[in-house]
Image (cartoon, rainbow, N blue to C red; front, side):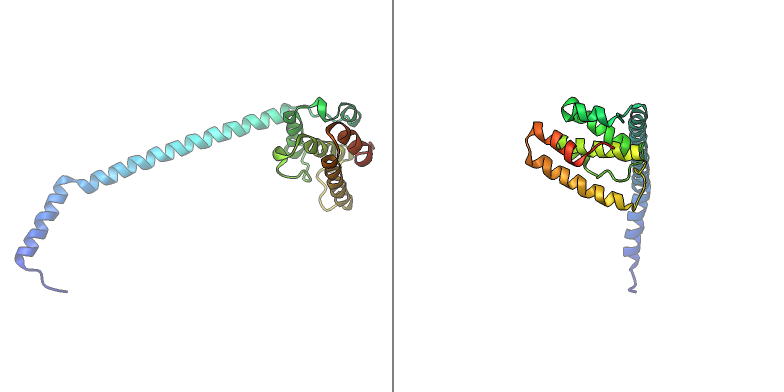
Length: 172
């Protein structure tokens, strides 16, 4: 290490005294602490708001009365329900009913495709296999579900529902 001359040391001491007198480092740390507190408060408020919204959604789902009558679903078809009603019933089956076989991305599906998923969810709920993982019948259902979706995409709006119901979704 090189030796600093007396004049260099005096200059360094003078600069250090000036910095200490201005309290710049203390002001910086105080400002940083205030910013951290503000950010933490905003994050906490956002988390509380998200928890409140989730609790509201859960309360709506628990208060929701799903349709379990397959005959009524067959008579009404998808035209009798709005897409929001269908999605709400599917979400009820997934979250409250515990159906593990409902595919993700239902909100992106076409209304008719979501309706087929809803009918399958009702059938699984009525048969008691909604939470049964690894069932051989489940793989057969997945195949039937894919066939129903293919049939739906091939047929027109009015005939595709009745055709999918009569061929792929027979009543128990």
